[in-house]
Length: 623
Image (tube, rainbow, N blue to C red; front, top):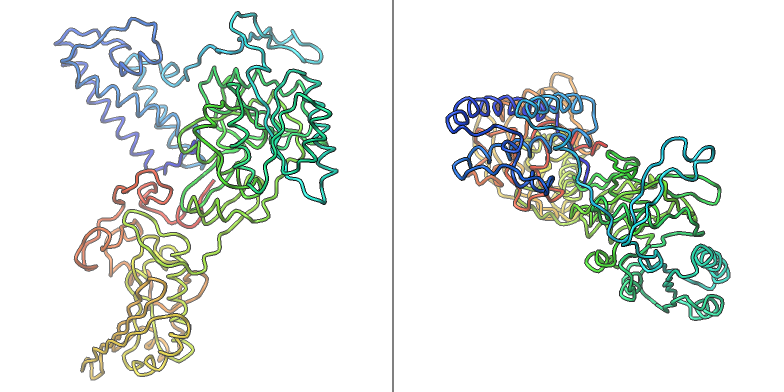
């Protein structure tokens, strides 16, 4: 995933790290390098593997084995520089952007002091195209006045005809109600393909023998494949198995094929940039034109698309998701087959997400243009299979639809080092809110306690790493709460009365304990002989309430003071549940502002992907 999120305080820390790195490297330069008489040149300071990869023809000076420590430091410095530069490109948010710019400027200054050219370090490596000829720009006036030309292909000996390089593939679904319309659309599409180049190889699959037979009569060169009762994804996989050319054009939604498709240009981009997929701009029958490039943000159980690009090269835009038709290699499609989904179920969103997670890069080159049926593609909310596979609770699609997964109050299954699913969070909150509602209805004084109170104060919902729930009730209301057993059982709770009353505190009964269970959650209720809500009511003041998942619920008199005194220093920074970190109880001094390294590094729900401070990342994924 190309989008990078770095909190501005992390950027400040980066600047500090750079300062320390500079001190270390300065001492190395003034001491070790002078003593060893090693020429402190750019080749020496740059990581040798990186240097040789970027400049394979350069006969670089190789450091001696005794210089391994300094080489390791330089490799780390150059790696940090690349990470910061990449973060600066993809970051969004003013504070983060400002601090990253400062960090980047400081790092570039450090690199220059070390005789490393930042521009050379950050530049992508490009390659000569293998199957198509290169092109040359002839200047700004060459194509005047219509600019149909400007970049001209140079002659070369290795060029392979485009019809041998690319097979065009397409799958259509036919029903009784649309057969005539589909026949008309396919005639227009195929006529435009063969008019552009009569030698093109086209494989069309459909679930109608009649449609395919009629088209074969009109277009004898067409390869027709009758495929019934399978999804769009499986149909495309079957087509790909018939392809003999090295490249494939997935003719997604194309209604008219023209020379503006410029397939040679897309293949040139794939081979020069060493990427996996290249698409073009799209325009519909109304003439509306779009670049068709989106960035995808995938974390916190959410997948969110943002139209636009962060980086470009050779007039192509790096994208996480391509909206229109695209070219890729047959070899890539054999490894990265399509999922068993229809297009309206998120077929292409799933495919592009999967390859982006492998760091396979894709681009759109907007000077290549495809005529498509529509710039929009409705999903009708049928994305459940896609969402289930990727553990998604919410998708904001490229077409600005917001699709939410229904939870059905799923069973809670905690995982150390990972955030709870939104459904687990809601299940916990539902249980707590139900108990508090029933308490209020029965005149029983109940308040949030422990981590449940902390979550409400910090997030206005359950802590994303919660393991249970805690509520206190007034011991004087013990027998009244016992009477609610049937109500809770009818609401799908388990109900256990654990007793534990004792006497006395301030001449009042104390204690009492209940354990309720709901969808895998344990909710512990403890009796207290005096509670803030009772005292406030006696003074004619309403109890203090906080929001918990949209419901106002009782808390101790001053919620902020209560959680600060209960949990101690830096409570608004984050610490995982004591069970998750292997502690014996919750009565510990929590170490905040740190998450345990994830047991499955890189997963979207790993807590260590987030800064361990602030509520916004857990409330809404920022673009």
